Length: 126
Image (cartoon, rainbow, N blue to C red):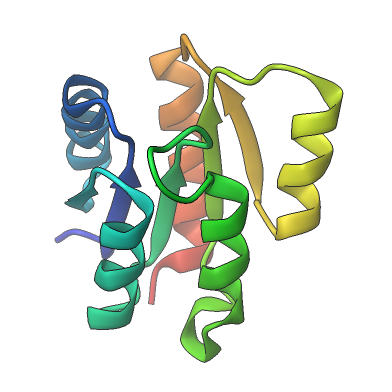
């Protein structure tokens, strides 16, 4: 039985589906959003158990989306994994400041993603 749902936010449909496949392999229900506004609409409709979030999106950046998710009452405890090509200390710091639990870089190591999901899964399972 899946532990819950994970919202994958990435504007590249192929990467979104690829990450979604790993989400499903980890036993979660995959939900998808291709931009920031769609992500926030998904969160307002039903708060996910975890969010995997790209930073560079066509409308809002991932840091702002993370802040907004964390500002929603039910969203405060939702772990956020930043998954981005931005591999620098400044971006990592911004990820931490907005409330992200983990910061992974692209191209990502599938095993590392699965390990991170497994670690966070024990937190989000009800």
